[in-house]
Image (cartoon, rainbow, N blue to C red; front, side, top):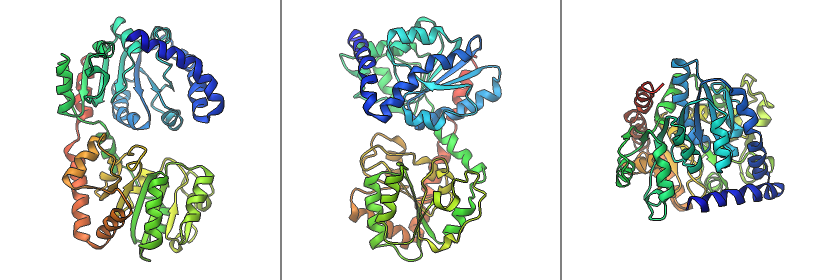
Length: 419
């Protein structure tokens, strides 16, 4: 099966450059990978700790560990690789990393070249990134390799009769730090016992948000102490429900801040056009002043504020009375831990079973799931009209964050025994 896998990667290396001519995202995927080996050449002769994350969410799980390592082991260089353009494009200038680049396609040739060109002292993979050729090469070179915030599921290849080559690649890991007991038990079924249930490092990451100044003058001006719903990382299917609610159920004293996932001009203007109340765009108000120091322009008069910008959603959640987090209706749920740390109720779509924190919070009542317009409307009306219910729901979320802190410390204690 490893030969079939390697042949598939080979075919991808041929087909992707052709397909990239017709797809902008694929073009970024291919072009970025062509630059990876040149970028890592800057690390020659340095001791390196390598972090690999699929995308932005996994990077946030790596981030608390990177921050700790930079303080404790400042003589090491940090390499961060991404699989997806969405993660790379947002974090390519991350200051605590010495090099940020794409992960080369997982061919045997690339794996050997990549590892040979780096003086790796440790490799840290995040959540569920498993690339057999790279892992096999790390194993051959006896480079300490760790899985952090791992999640294992029965439907993964490791647990299938035909997935022997993937199971073999897991031998590269010196230790697995997983999020839940189920992952530990699954690894045990294939004879891996070097496992610790440490939880999710994102809890440590989001808890630190409370230590920073989350106040934004233009958001405070817009909110004007009124009841405010913040809808973060929304997709079209989320926005359809939200706009319907705004147009037909919102009261005059109810405000909305929408931070769409897609901030392309056409999509933003279409969203603005669909809303039948006074709506303002972030780009129009601050004229691209990313320092957030510009004077607001009578924002009190607007009922809806569309944030056509990336990077300030976390601070905006601090102003919310209720949060709606997008992606759970179709495309994949976005980060619910950020609003949870502020102790506010969270509403999501009904497709969340692959996200442990969402499953947990729905079960204990901190996160409310909706699947259609009727449920969406009734949920938000209930939250708006029942202060006691709203406050209790928020308390549940805040306590959930507090109860799950500590993964970073446990992982760091282990890493110190290797470095």
